[in-house]
Image 1 (cartoon, rainbow, N blue to C red):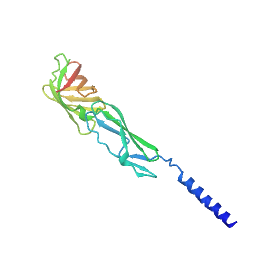
Image 2: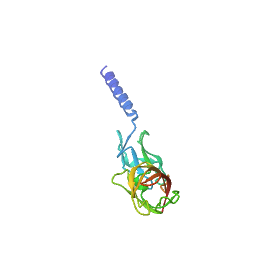
Image 3: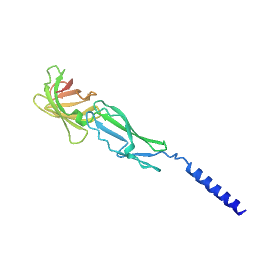
Length: 209
């Protein structure tokens, strides 16, 4: 009887060991992003990967095994997705994604431009102008707008600029404008109210030099 009990105990232990050894790892590794999950960069700017980590409850640190798929085309505005994936030794896969938005920002507006207009010769617009960044990330200054000088100050929102009514070289100036998708052309629709005479509405076309 004692031998039978002993054999039963051994069989029980063997079965427990076998079942324990057959227990399958079903937990996927975890990929964690460093930095924000959504990143914005300026057109033609630089995307710097903030980094990531990957860990698994069985295999430990798998950061070095992470594969990154997708790409960012900094020369074209748009929304891009980068996916970070890793697989543990048991075949479980974990992944996470980061969104990168390439957009027109303040730096894309600035520069030197050749300027054409349809003001009909009644308002003398300078044919060469420069646009510079203002005090904040949404301010712009259009310098020497007239042949006699003057600075037009605007506020940007994406690809749109708005000009509150302001006095420049004896005229009240207001309006708005847009910049194209590759930041090479700015078109302003402005209204000029001189001290003497009637209002004049003009289109100014800025082509990047």
